[in-house]
Image (cartoon, rainbow, N blue to C red):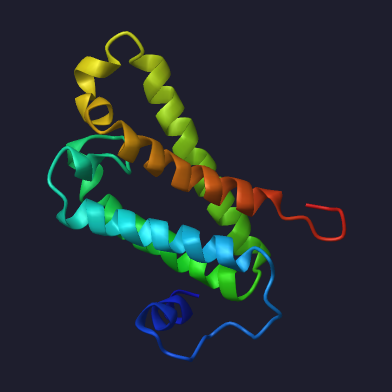
Length: 150
């Protein structure tokens, strides 16, 4: 899956996944892949505090998160070309875990969130966009129904 996604990112015509007819979600998955690739770039080259926003976990993990964003982008591109149930479930679980981690941070640090995490408040549009990327990945991955069954 990663090899096929890398080939798509480079513009190659080869895809390791079998050809299937294009679903209506193909465009959404490509947009999700592009968003995650963008967050990987932000995590790698953007200055602080912008680089910390995709993870919502602070400076220590922000640069390493770029690699995870590349994996998310590869998974989303693989799902754009062929529906793979196990990969789709994995993306849904990872996006849900991210939302749980961010929610736990907000609950634990609710009284002092602005003090401990000023980056999210200094770049509110980017913060919402980062969380929105995970939300779209979660809802598209979890919302796909096959013959009325998830």
